[in-house]
Amino acid sequence: MKKVALSLLAFAMAGALAFGQDAPTVKIGGYVNSGLKITNNSNGTTYQAYANDFGAAGYIGKLSATLAAHNYGFVIVTDLKESGYLDPVNKTNLSGALNIDTMYAWASPVEGLKLFSGTGNDGSLGEVDKEGAGSFSSADFTAIYSADGFTVGAGVNPSASGNTSTPVSFGVRYAADKLATLNLTGATNGAALDVLRITGSLTAVPDLVFTAGYNATSMATTVQTFIDVDANYNVTPAANVGAYAYYYVEAGTYYPSTATVSGDGDTSDAGAVKYRLYGSYKLSDSVKLSAYLQGDTDASPNYEPQAQVSYTVLPGAVINTQVLYDTNPTHVSSAVPLTTFDIDFVYSF
Image 1 (tube, rainbow, N blue to C red):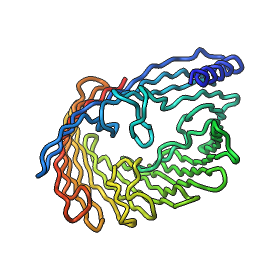
Image 2: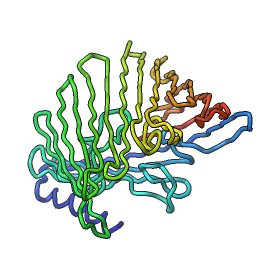
Image 3: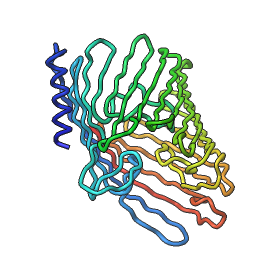
Image 4: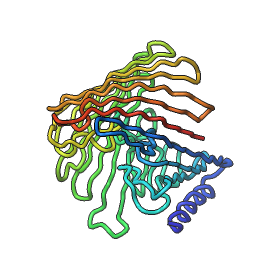
């Protein structure tokens, strides 16, 4: 790991010497999430340490360091947990004390072109829908070029143990200011197309944001496909309302583990729709109320109302208190309704 870090730093410094004309800025940032989750049903009550904002059990932390100049820089983000660390995608426990979430260096030899080395990039080709992966690629070597609203990129991700054929990522985006953005990304498994995501957002209507996406993964083996649509509208500067729908089309898990709205893992009902009606209202600069009603068209559906109060203690520090009721959390006819109370502390700097 030290060798990789030194290589990335050398890459950034080479960019500085070759292209540097301005002094770089350094920023240190962090994120801490901890909370208490209490669940209750007819079988009893359980208490759990749970980082609800991050979406994983226990206490979670992130620490980032960024160096940026006009035409070079690097980014390092680490994930920390009180015992072991997390897979940043699936949020499952792994061994060790910390995990390198993101680490890359970049250089811009000409205006509009960025070359990246390491895990990640600047996110300029990330999916724009609610349930998409949110990132263009974590390829080891990536090039992204942007000009006049168009962005194109490609990357390769060779294995440390060697590849007979190297996986390749690719993407293209067109963004029209205050109108719409269309984003297409994909990846091969080295031999065949394995991932294809087509996502878009509409921003032409003031105070309305509309996003949609078609997401297909594992196409070379068992296709996992879903479509999601989300619309939210600022009724006033303080009030927002929205509606969301998610349609799972083929194979795999019922809802993907990386989805913003986590699912139950039921594999029996491909073709079911998950939907949500939601809204929020700011009582003041420090207090925000929000609620949603969520349901689905599963053969044994679950309906979930939730209410939440968010209190900003100081800039960057928020306490979220919520109550959630699941009428059928396991999607079976014999399921026992479940009430969840959660108090969650989030601090970012």
